[in-house]
Length: 167
Image 1: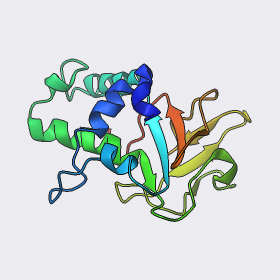
Image 2: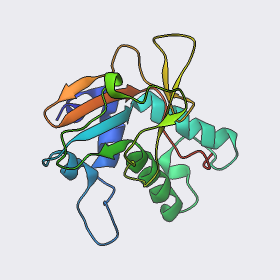
Image 3: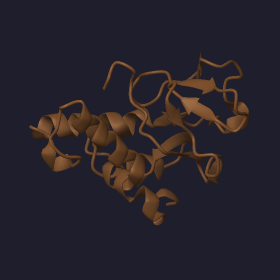
């Protein structure tokens, strides 16, 4: 509810409600997040998603920073799926979620649980005590981190988290 009630996450919410969890189910991450369980969500803002699409333009993969610019529906859907599934850690019915006080203490260390893309995210601490990076280059917003929701915690991301072998 929190994400979809804030305009800065509208693009992300649209993706959450569009991408099926698997090829065998029509259940979406948005439906999953509204069910029981505990989640850590690294939610990219609209600007973060736009920035990511611009990176695709700069790399020559698409001609303009738009979902319509992808050469195929399959490639677009794949990229959208990676954005969504890389941003959520599902702790199941366990009481665990990751607010910044429970992040791994060592810079470069992995979170113990996998994200929904079956990858482990890393946390990096820089010389600035207010700066925390996920996967080495995606900063958590300093002002909007540790947003507690009924079933977990949200960290606003100014950049999309993607697996390192991507873009």
